[in-house]
Every structure is written in structure tokens, then in C-alpha cells.
Image (cartoon, rainbow, N blue to C red):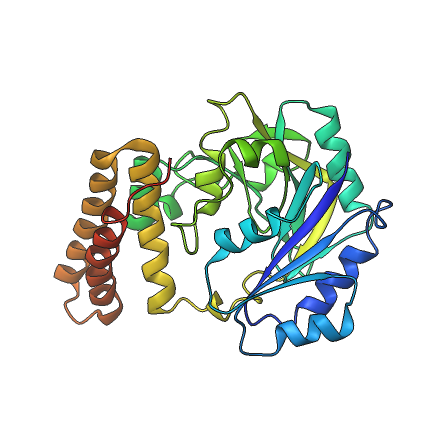
Length: 306
């Protein structure tokens, strides 16, 4: 079984060298593993750094920022491997990670993905295993109710640390570093290019059970994730908030129907309204209240991909 690596970069020049070095020295199949860096019109010379320092890497330079999923698709058009490992540029693979993920895929013929154990740079726990989105979890998260509930409650999107100790199949895994079986990506038509940023995992994983596949967590493989360090987008700014909301409503609409998307939107609006009644001077909540309607209009005016 062969594997290629795809890394989407946007203003990631500080993180790319560590990511690429760890990737190139990782797999025993490194001679056959192609590494793609898709640069989304970075302004910090990320592409030049890859071109000058990593000539073995296949560099795809986009003239505009086309979004994460669309960038992955550009590399998929060139890849011929059985599997592709999609990584953020702020991820550093630990020794043997690629081989461990490939072995997991071989052990489980129904595996459409395998994801490694992630840790933060200080060695602390990093969640990987995630539940499918639902209106209940959306309400608990937006309202703050989830923070008051136990770590193993289904109110949380992410599974607790106690569920990250052994190999297992789960609803979804983190998209920061995940290996996909190429056959599955071809079957669902690749990544949905209507999703610019955030919730790509939900879109890719929601069809798995219907199509007879499973997502596996493989703690035998390990990677360090400097969470958020790669994105100029890591700051929670207005643009990032808009895309989080738009992608959420789009996913609900695409996979659960118009009614579910509207309920999610109205839930967000009501919670924002209640917060503003309690504290009318809350500028952050006032901005979020406005963004919900803008994001919902954008999500519902886009034709969902099949």
C-alpha cells in the first residue's frame, strides 16, 4: 500500500521546514512517497522557502486563496497513491508514524481513514476522536452548557482523554493529520470546494457509515501539533468566525436538510439575543449576532455539492 502526503499552506513559512523535515525522514517508503505542498497565495514567502530548501517536494502555487478543501483536491489530481496523508503545516510526525497508519489501514479493510495520536508541544493531551455534529451538541457548545458537563458527556464534540488510549473506530477524527484511503475520496468526489475553511472533517466523515466505512484512531502513530500556529487564521477574528458559522450551517443543510440548518441558525441567534439582553454592551456578542445572519444567508444561497 502506497501513500502520498498533502500539506496545505497559507503563510506557514515558519512551520513548513519542521513539518517537511519530519515527513521526509519518517516513512520506510520515503522513496516512493510523494510530498505535495499546496500554497494558497501566501504573502510570507512560504512557496519560495519550499522551492529553495525542499526541491524534492512537489509545490503547487495557487494565485489566490482557494480554501483548504479545494487545495487538497489540486494535489489529489496529481497523486496516484493508494492513500493520502493530509496534514497541517504545524504538524511534526514522530518516527514511524506513516508506516503505523498504513498498517492500521491494512488491518482494517473497512477503514477509510486512520489518524495518529496528537500531542501538544509540551506533551499534553490533544483531542483527536470526535462525535458527529448534532443540534444537541451545537446547543450545548454555543450556550456554554457543555462546559458544565462531565468530560464523557455526549454534549461534547470531542471524546475525553480516556477514550484515546487504544486503537478504535470512531465517528470522526481531527483533520490536522489524517490518512485517507484514496478510493473513498474518489467515491465521494473529493473535498467539497464550497467549504472554504472549517468543518471539512464533518463533510468528509458524515457519509462513512452509509458507505460502509469506518474512521480509525491509531495511537501507535504519533505527531506533535502546534495547534493554530500555522494559520494567520489561528486568531479568532471576524473573518474566521464568519467561516466557522457559514461552514456549520452549510454542513447541516447538506447532510441533514434545510430544516436542521435553520434550527441550528435560530439556536445561535436566540443564545446571542439572550446574552445581549443580559449585557447589552457586549460588543463581541453583538458582532456574533450579526455574523450568524450573514453566515446563514451565505450558506443557504450556495448550492450544496452532491
